[in-house]
Image (cartoon, rainbow, N blue to C red; front, side, top):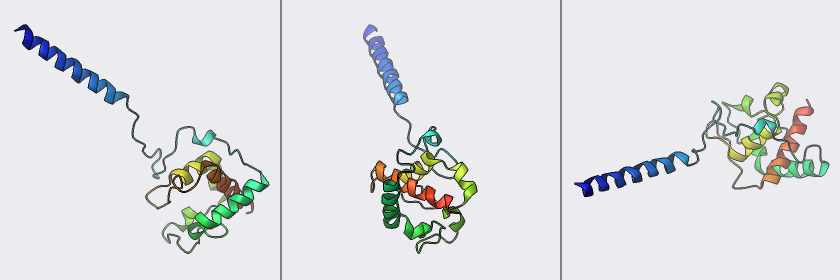
Length: 146
């Protein structure tokens, strides 16, 4: 009888331990807002280390031409050759009112993580964080040129 209870107790301990370990695992990344973007809670507080740096802006412009222009267009108006015609308004990076809702850190994570719909390819496998920050520095100049 004791053997049966011992086996039962050990099984219960193993079950509880396994449950505790699975509960502590990091949650799966999921969109942090209804538009499908994956943004950490502090994204809007992050500052661009290259903000206002002319060399970084020039590098960002070259990177933008290679990775972003085909959809966002040469001036960031959302009119690139591969732009989604149903979402061109959302792809326009020059809209001033959107700038207040998208500080540097938010833009960084949108470029870094991308989203499925409407499609925005993630750049985390293609570019370094420094390169993405340079693109952010450049795209912010598009906003101020309105």
